Image (cartoon, rainbow, N blue to C red; front, side):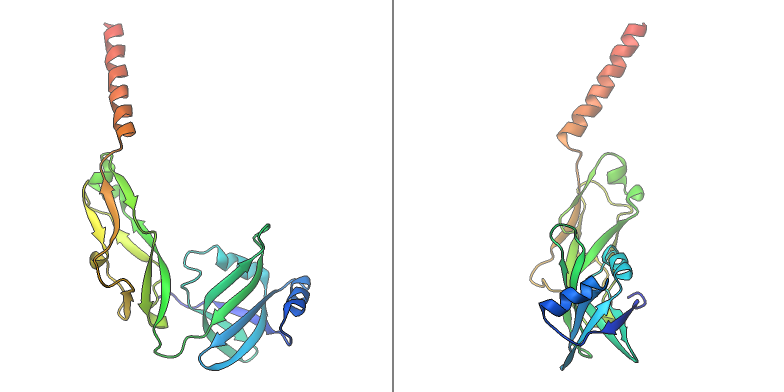
Length: 210
């Protein structure tokens, strides 16, 4: 797990749609922190940092520190409301996980070393079955992403969840089967046809030159 990123937040005194609209008119984004059997905390966020984090990989699986006055809350993003037209953030729900509590998060998959896969190098296609995996884990074990090394994989090889090294304390929520994450598929028909066409054109060119 990567280091926590800090959001500097301000408290909001009132809940409700009117208060939230007033917060947005002031140039900030309304939010709430709940969970861990504690009272909810109404806050507002600075939109520039929020927009930056929204565009990072793993926004919903990253453990953030939200600093409100002298208090710091370790939280996960549980809901994000966006304007349907502009995609501007309208409201954020943060959850405080209880200590030792296992939570469910969806973690994105990052494929590395594609250039070192013989199957891909010679025309194979990476067929991604799952772009993310749902994990059950304690908050301190949430990975930023899951890296899958493609080095050495040939056409016909498959990557299953059993071959993926997960952090201690994290496990997939699907436990009844060794599900497939990706395969190295044979070249598509169209790609093979394009290759044949290039060869034919090359041969014709040689004949004309003769």
